[in-house]
Amino acid sequence: MSFWWLVLLTVMNHVSFKGVKVLVTLDALHLGAQPFAVGLLFALFSLLPAGLAVFAGRVSDRYGPRGPMLVGSAGLAGGLLLCFLLPGMVTLYVAVLLIGGCYIFYTVAGQHLVGAWGDVASRTRHFSLYSMGNSVTALVGPPLAGFSIDAVGYTNTYLVLAVLPLFPVAFLFYAGRRLPRPQVATPAGPRPSSLDLLGRPALVRALVVSGIIETGMELFNFYMPLYGHAIGLTPTRIGIVIGTFGGAMLVARALLPALARRMGEERVLAFTLMLGAITLLGFPFVHEFGVLVALSVAFGLGLGCCTPLAMMLTYSRAPEGRAGEAMGLRQTFNKVTEIFVPVVFGSLGSAFGLGPAFWLTSALLGGGAFMMRGEARRASAR
Image (cartoon, rainbow, N blue to C red; front, side, top):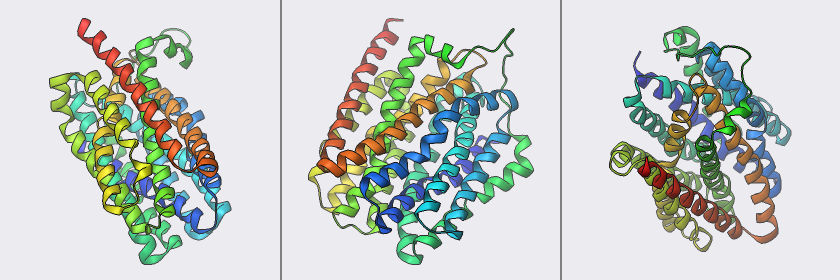
């Protein structure tokens, strides 16, 4: 089976997932929710995944990717249909829990499968292609949500987004057994605790940087709808601003294999984190649509390479036979970040305005850049 099938399935699911994050935020604001309540709602996307990610990785290690990916696709479609059938704030809270708790199984199994597909030499290319597919979803999902809201309303937009995961559900049900199954070494004796992975310093550094990257991503995905709404942008324009961020990520990830060969993964990661940190400083001072689009492009170019590099470093630094578990632990770090960032930043926004959250995240990205500079020096010394 071609690797492009995995990319296609992920694109169809993730367009819907990216779109629903924007849709839920704008729908809650439309229903009168305050920034703190919207932040709490956004954090619930990650509450169950924070506890289930490592388990999802172990399931993927033991049983292969098809089952977890099918659960994730079906849960995404089900949560969206629930919002269409029973609109309201209570339903939004239930639906984001359902979507987040199921979709983590697709995410972890899909990323595990990327690393296991083909040989070691093709790993960078596969992670780059997979991440490029995700960039397409960031380019398409938010504008699709914004256009649909303006065209058919909030409730009907849930139905529009629910159609997309139905193809992955059908494909995985009927043809999913043809997906490659990662080769897993069976350890002798009792299976070690996932906490043992934290005894590997190189892996821990990759996980910490992954959490920092996720903070930057979540700030943009959560705050840009709030910020756009506050300065009077329409849902369509908010979707375009977020979509241009995805388009810039797509360009950066297309260049990633060449950059990694020339500079090394750690050095590329340090440079792009610093570019993202510098760009964030300017957002709170901008109120014009065109300038916001330009800043979104610069931020996307900065963070575009970061996620695939963090995935690749996590996979390559995992013990043999536990790559899925390590990818699950990475998702746990990320999801804990995704729980706290919207709540903390929503509180900051309610109390002090939107600027401090941008500046705090800029400082975190800068710290991650310095950490990766140290990693690059260690890699050069080996």
